[in-house]
Length: 540
Image (cartoon, rainbow, N blue to C red):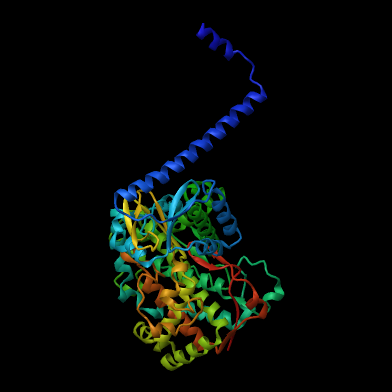
């Protein structure tokens, strides 16, 4: 009888009401199940913390399920206001370390330098970069920036010799590119063939000014490509240069546009977390092909020729090909270095000029220091003399403190572990970190903590480094621990050389009142830069 009843029920017509009711039941059931899981997760976290004798951290439950907080972050990111939105959220919580719900997961946010030290150094083996490989691998593959574990160790050991002091101290290799940069700046807007800034400003806003950030991005592409491939993109040249390999020819502008589009898409994939796969457009894939095709051709030429004896003429790829003949590995390592190194150096230069234009006292002191130390002759600039120019180093440090190039960083726990501080009312107890937890450490906020940087932490004041130059885990412009940026000194040396050459040639750098009054918006790519460009006039 029961079987017959079931059979008969299947013959009943399916109405709109039935479908709607079923959907409502499923949605409600899913919400109830998700909320029940959320309650269980919090109970389980408290139980495991207590079992280990650890303190419970402050917890922010952004209900329902952290969806709205995630959407706010995505909206602010779209309008280049992600960091202000994150800052508002962090400042609304009276803790340096706390747990916060975001899109069905609970992350840990920490601004405590002791916790950062644990994540990056003392408990390094308990963490990984998580989804970074999946997010960035379409372009970068497996390399030093995207890998973890043994392959990361292999990558770092293989690349370390390429950034030895002997190689990065040859500052004269920058000079021919600096000369092109100086020539353009001396001509002003008449020397610019394109804006390249993505600006939507009116022409009157920057009449007589040049977007030096766009020029720095070209400059660092030229120096990086020559360092890596032995062939400069020559993007600062007035005409579109042709990149030649034995297989084909490429327009420099095509490579630049493809690389820039890839950088922006990779940044979106990284910000999207587990939803990275949503950013995989046909244009993105085409741009990847453009970049890969050129680099693969250069690698083929490199593998087919004998190594030269002249070390000064040896490229990164030629040196690296002595350690591996795998063309995919060579491509991945080269692109990891190119995408990370090029944008960070350009960003440091851009933020430094942005700050010097707005702080004439610092500009005047720095220019006086440069002229006293180096005069107007580029031959006086050496790796050693740059390091001895203390005020220059402090200006760059202060620029990196105010505007860190990677303002946010994350790690994922690969096993149950703990942070040394953050639990209890006084935040003096260790905090339980379950396996799979994402920990976010906002570098741009750590760099402004008044307990480490003083009551004027928000101000650009390089002199603070004379007062206290000893900062460790509260100053992370190049990260820290075993994964500290391998190209740190390369970037600082290149930026220092460019700043010195600019101040040798220009007595002032100015801008318009409209630009000074404009709200600063930061655009995130592989690293951070100024949305709309850094518009300035270089006065001879």
